[in-house]
Length: 160
Image (cartoon, rainbow, N blue to C red; front, side):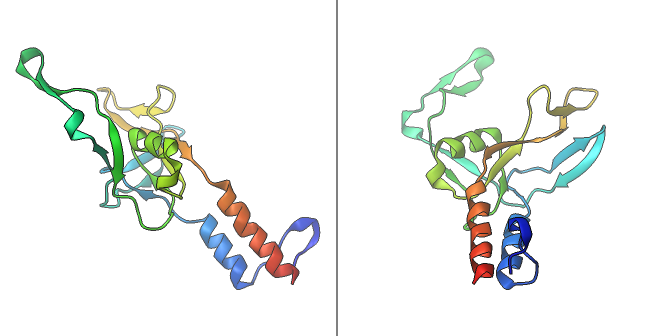
């Protein structure tokens, strides 16, 4: 049941499914709540889901050293994988390092990937300088193709 200008009328099961897919909530895979600020106040909070994405490193290639003041240190990390991703392709919020890894390795996760913007223009800090939130999310990986494919299914289903 297509209407004018390529829009689709409401009501079919396929249309409902597409709208539900497009409106899926973010899963926060960081160990803390993400507070989004707007006009100086918390606009939206994404609570921690209780599941956390973690990077997997190549431990065999890392060497531990003793740094200043006797502090144990380890040489730069070579990431070889990631753990804790959801089974489905739900949109997720992750740390910057996980977001960049998933952006560079698109075949690992099919879903959309976002993270808190901690750039100087995005970060929100308290009077002591501790980060308390962000003004926006960074888009590491967005799949408009998923929504486009679902929209095509609606148009095809309603044209029949």
